[in-house]
Image 1 (cartoon, one colour):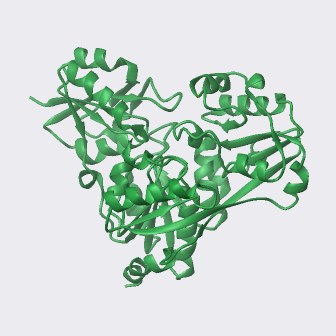
Image 2 (image 1 turned 60 degrees about the vertical axis):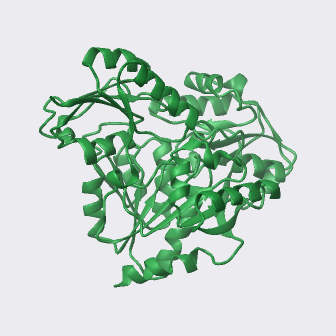
Image 3 (image 1 turned 90 degrees about the vertical axis):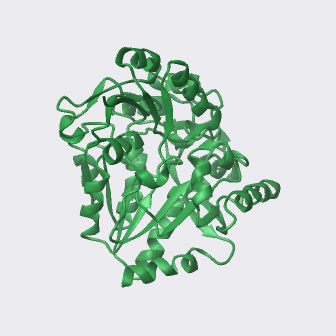
Length: 442
């Protein structure tokens, strides 16, 4: 009899683990996925065309709250945890729920879920969401391209729409973002790479994505999401650590596993973190990944030209990257730092929040004088726009990787925040990438 399995997920790692480990496995039957973290991803099905011949009707996706009832209804033998940026204690609470109901609880190993590429692979992952992974990825891509390599970026999945249609997505222009009906969260990750001239792949079926990406690259850059592990076997594994949250590198799943695997541990934001916190994270790296090279890097933050004059002495609304504040638990980001450094006063947007934005603030009481850029679907994007324009402020500071002015009608003067990774120690990323560059040139 096939062992019955439920995969706990959030529309990303869960589908990948199924595709790689369970899709053709005659010894196991995945009876359901569950979903959490992201709105509007439950009450769907993993489609039959992606699920394979053992699943002619596809696989239902339920809310995680239904876990016990699903175990009972299907006689489930095994519950597999497959999403990221979760405190160790919360993972074990889910394990307790499964075990109490009579099911085994499983974490799939890194090797079991990684695909091997015919090309050189560099991965950029992190110990927490919002650690500085995106600017590090941009820095690495620029260094690889400067070495004369054809760089293709494969981004961690964010399949929030039609899963079958999103199986393999190739982005080469900003128009492709509209063609694939991307959310703000997706645009934040893809747009900076596209503006720099790189091709980006994402989707659901990462075996098919890899094989297609290999046809136009001699090096693959895995741009990780949350604090998840890479989907591909890396030749160089760069893991970004955040000294603004010392200790988190050893208390979140799978961030700690990422750090223990790291070839390079990049300590981000050292220009704004306390030295004792930097030293604490450095000590964690030395204990958990003693062979890793440590790179200290600043997160250089600035306002676009003319921005300082626009915000100085003004009451401003700061808009920050949404996942950094929600999944990542940060109470501030680059926008807050830039606004304060330029003499602005921060405005609390909570009284102006509408619709789902009210719920976001209710579920994240650590957020006050800033607005998370939530945009999981057209309705939420409209609510974000309305909340911005209802907020009593003189100017808007936009610290999201995507230029919200291109997507929203903002009726106040606005300025964007720019932030880039700047290494402060040697050897730096250029030197540490040298073996990968040599392999890619062969």
